[in-house]
Amino acid sequence: MDEPTPGTPGTPGTFGTLDASDPVQVAEYERHFYQAFAALTDNTLVRLIWDWDDAAQRVRTRIPYAEQVIYCLRDDQGRLAGAMAVNLDPGAALQSAGFGFLPPVAHAQRSAPEGRYCEFMNLMATPHHRDQARATYQAFIRDFCYADLVSRGFGTAYSTCTRRRLRAYQLFGATVLDETAIQGEARYFLHWPIADLLADRRSNGPFRTLLSLSKR
Image (cartoon, rainbow, N blue to C red):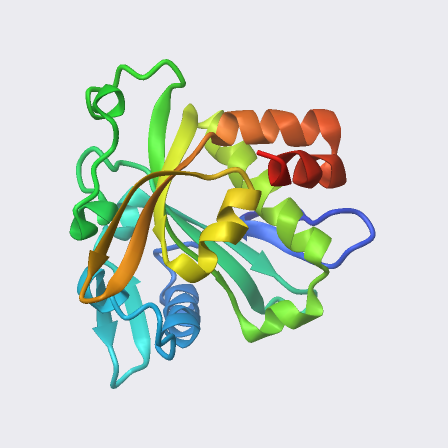
């Protein structure tokens, strides 16, 4: 990982980013990526938008690694416990477009008042996540991933999700912009006000933030 950062005090975990020039790190990530999604019966549409190597049990998105940042959560033994892949240039290629979704016109024209936008492409936990405290995982997403994205000038993110994950993401601040059904499988297009969510987290703390989001 590049520039590892300790996790929340009192909990295990190291936060960092994937070094896409390191074939060992990339192989580890792609194998866990495959294991996290290959067996999901309610999420078969990802076969349409990602590049799958079933023989090697690896998968990657079609967005080049050079246009991504992949945030990594590792346990105290250095094993990958969680990851989030973010498309930093969705104006060039938007993964969500594979389902027919497009960002609002203001963002497509790069004139939205909340600043630049990015795209969440993959959020996963590995079997090693069982050893991580829930608070550590939340700190990884908000305090590390969101904070880094906001520091890069991003105020908003977009993503897609299945019906099964929709409620959980809404509780953490996502709103639905559009929805569709492909081959009988529902897909939702989500808006994440990451700059606002980060500010809310810092002013209210994790537990009040979760409570306030659950009431929206």
